[in-house]
Image (cartoon, rainbow, N blue to C red):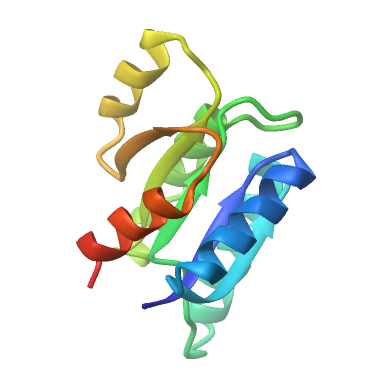
Length: 137
């Protein structure tokens, strides 16, 4: 079981579904959410500041990231995350793009981001979580 999973999606129903499925699969002790990439970057920024100040922090080892969001989309989030150097601070953090897009370009573009380990289509299911859980134990 992971300590923490981060779900980033602008759709409140998708966030609620993510929480329920992750809870039922007993995949994480805590589920953190954000409704766009800007909120997600702020979350990692705040964690980085606490870590730099010497605080002991727990960060999500896995983030489920939507692509199509207002304010800052998933691609902009990934670019900003890397530009800020968070991959060096949170070395074990990995990302799964969870999207309803059917554009093959989006699937291929995830390969340009070494921190993205998979692309999954919405909606999230218990079977998807069980599969991830078996890979992360």
